[in-house]
Amino acid sequence: MRSTTGWRVDDAATPLRRVVLPRRDLRPDDVAVRVDHCGVCYSDLHAIDAHGGGGSPVLVPGHEFTGVVTEVGRDVVRFTPGDRVAVGNIVDSCGTCAMCTAGQQNFCREFPTLTYGGVDRHDGSTTLGAYSREYVVRDRFTHPLPDGLDPAAAAPLLCAGVTVWEPLRALGVGPGSRVAVAGLGGLGHLAVRFAVALGADTTVVSRSPGKAADARRLGAHDFLDATDAARTAAARDTFDVVIDTISVRHDLGPYLSLVALDGTLCQIGYLGEVAVRTTDLLIGRKKLGSAGSGGLPATAAMLDFCARHGIVADVEVLPSARVDEALDRLRRNDIRYRFVLDLSDLS
Image 1 (tube, rainbow, N blue to C red):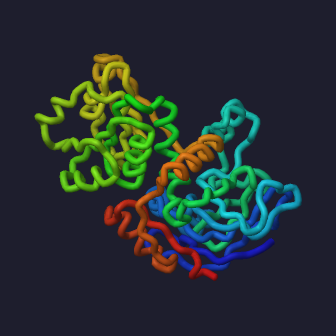
Image 2 (image 1 turned 135 degrees about the vertical axis):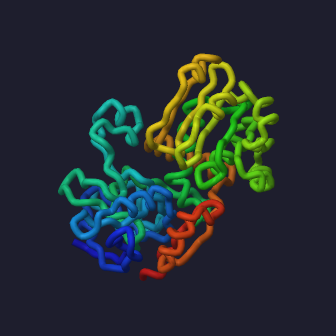
Image 3 (image 1 turned 180 degrees about the vertical axis):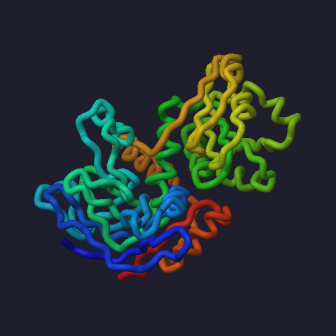
C-alpha cells in the first residue's frame, strides 16, 4: 500500500479532519495522479449529511478533479509521468453490459464504481475521493486535460459539466434549437455556456431577477423572470429543450408549460421524487427526461469541445484547509458558481 494526505469526514456535525489515507499499489492499468484541484459538488454535501459517523465506511469526498500523472502501471501506454489529466465521478464499471459497451459507463447495469463512497471491483474496499493529494485510478477512466484549459476552472467540468453536456447532445441541441436553462448555479451556468456554444437560442429562467446581468455575461440571449406571470404566460410552448437544474423539490408544471410541441423537459438538478400531471405532458406531446454524469466517450468529447470553445466553470479557488468554509457557503448558496479546492497545501 501507498499513502497520501486528505480530508476525512468523521460525522456531519464536525469539521473535516486532515489525516493520512491509504492508496492501493498500482495495478497494471493504473495511474497515480497528484491531485492539484478538486471541485466541491453539491452531492458532497449530501454525502456528508448522510454519513453516520464511526460505524460507517470512511468518507473522503471529491469527484471532479484535475492533476498530474506521477506514476503509471506496467501496461499503461496512454499516459506518462508529467501528463495533465482529469478524472470525474466514475472510476470503474463492469465493461461488458449493454450500457458499458454503448459507452454509457455512467449507467452500468452492475452500477459504476464511484470515485468516493463506491466499492472497488477488485478488493471490495471503499473508494476514497479527491479531497486528497493523490488518487490512484484506472487509466481508462482518466482523461487527458487539453492544453489551454485552466486546471482549476476545468475541474468542475468532470461532474457538473458532463452532467449538462450529455442531455444537450442527446437531445440534439444545435443551431436553430430553442433552449431554456432553469436555475443559474453550478450546473446552470455551464448549461448556458454549452447551449450558446452549440448554437442554440438560449434563455435563462430564474426566480432571481438579479441574475439577469450574469445570464447575459454567460452568453444567454434572453432572461425570463419566473415570477413575472405575464412574461411566463407569453413564453408558453416556446422551447424545444428546457434543462431544469434547480436543486430543490419544486413543481415541474410551470417549466413543462414552457416546452414546445414534442419538446423535452430534462430534470437534472433535483434527484428525488417528483409529481407530474399527465395533462402537462399530454397537451403538446411533451416529454420528461433526466440525465446523470456521463460516459467515457461523452466526457472526452466534452473536454475537446471545451478546449475549442474556451469553456470552463466560474470558480472560486480556496486552499483545501478551508474546505469547511467552502461547504458551509455552498450550503448557504453563497457562491457563483463553483468552489474548487487547491490541494497543494497537503504536500
